[in-house]
Length: 104
Image (tube, rainbow, N blue to C red; front, side):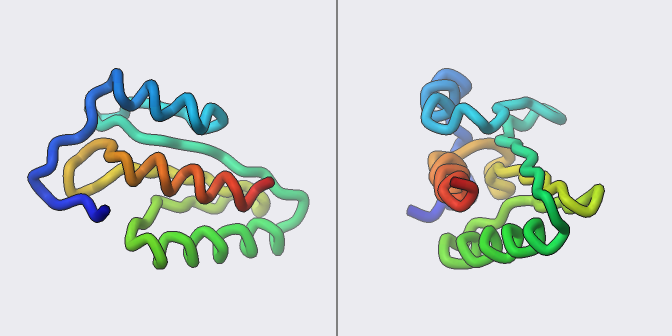
């Protein structure tokens, strides 16, 4: 379900439980906002770009867009949180799990 502005972010305890389903992602707090982060490393630049395009396709279908940073020609950093609520929502964990399936 889409998250609406005014919805409170999930509590840290609930975030920890949901995080157990995607343990390869980091659950971190930056600037008082909890986020999910992960770095993917590829052998070639083209593979990194293909991955980014697949992430973009999922994000468009979900209507939920991660922050994407491509660097060192073969590394893709992803950061997910719900900007509207300045924190994490269940949808963030769902998106991370769907992205994780791309890397398998």
